[in-house]
Amino acid sequence: MPGLTPTARNLLVLVIGEVSARFAALAGTAYLARTLGADGFGIVVFVATVVTYFSFAVQFGLDQSGSREVARNRNARAAYIFGLVGLRGGLALLCYAVLALLVLTVPLAHALRGVLLLQGLTLLVLAAHLGWAFQGLQRMGALALATLLGQLAFVASTVTLVRGPQDLVWAPLCYMAAEVTATVTLLVQYVARFGRPVLALDLATWRRSFGEGLPFFVSRLLRTIGMTFDVLALKWYLSDAAVGLYSAASRIAFFLLGVLALYFITLNPILARAAARDRASVGPLFVRSLRLTAIAVIPMGVGGAILAPEIVTTVFGVEYGPAAAPLRLLIMAVAITMIGSNYRSGLIASDHQLAETRIIAASALLSVVLNLLLIPALGLVGAAGAFLASEALLLGLGYHAFRRHVLAETLLRHLSRPVAASLVMTLVVAATPRTPVLLPVVTGIVTYVATILALRATTVAELLDILVARRNSPSRGTEVD
Image 1 (cartoon, one colour):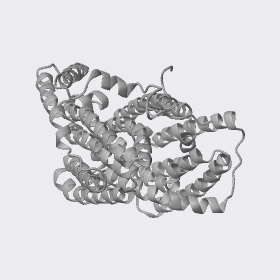
Image 2 (cartoon, rainbow, N blue to C red; image 1 turned 90 degrees about the vertical axis):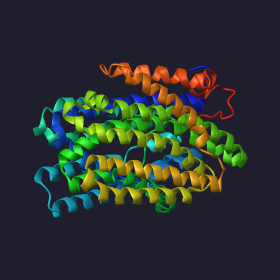
Image 3 (cartoon, one colour; image 1 turned 120 degrees about the vertical axis):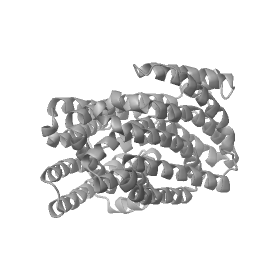
């Protein structure tokens, strides 16, 4: 890829791999939802959510702190990497033992008990997953390949093993196939490049790693609670079918969120380097990012809300039509999340991570409270409304903290033109036939881009500059051997 910096080349490879993998994952999930029905799909999602909480105890923030350590210390990276694998392996065994004890002692349906025990086995595979190490080594191509192959394995095993609601027990094994494929792919690539690994028992490294990983663990756990408590509450108050319907909407919203969040893989290190050189240089970078993020996500939130019924039935089928109402709110919440992520990234880059953790804690608390209050009365819409409100609070608190600690930047001035262009887009989409769904989507995109350029909110040259990082870029990176 001539003309690209090594950093941009790594990012491009990662984005291509991640986007492809996410499309494959969405396709496999849609097949699973259609085949199992709302009840079966609800059980699968509930089980995956429960196991996700245990997975954070296995990772314990070690992936973030470990990636940073690998990047800093090339000479000791082999011993460090597999020392952490040993630590994660011990945590995985402990977590699975706790999970199994809970499954065997808490009254549960027989089918749910078996699926939980099988899904929990992914914790053991997670311990050996070297994605964090390859990030530190700047081997994004290897990571992208492993992620894509893992999701393709998920799709292949799902289509092969799951043929109807009676095949529910095979679903966790399909997720296991994805994790095993990705993990083995990374291990093979590591051995081919760096030699055979040797597990190390280094208690000093383990103790230090726990201390370094704790802030990341707390922040990510709180964030996950805020984003997934709705599933637990729906299961408690309503039914597996309600969880399945809502999860169809959330899978589409989180697919969009995951793809868009790849942007911050670029932004975060750029902001961090700018803050390390000169705090004043963070301002222009942040303002540009905030403006461009608003331009990108506001029409997505508006257009997604308009086309939610067509989107959800196209992806998941007519049975999931009731998921359109929560999807409208969830897509708008994703737009708010992306705008707010700029403030959180700015706080972290400026060494205000504690303020960012407090903000996440407040958002998670509001999510829990609102889900408990709204779901009994409003059902699926109540859950989506709780998520929307908690993300709005996250944006508001992030905005306030950023203005207080870093830069007094006004948000509203970046929203007016994207909102105006979105209104024009809405009028055009409203007059466009909804079938096939691709027609109003393409029409809306073309209308919005033309309008936003006419309003001079951005330029074609600026958009191309974002997509292609030249070698004379001030953020030029370096490769890691």
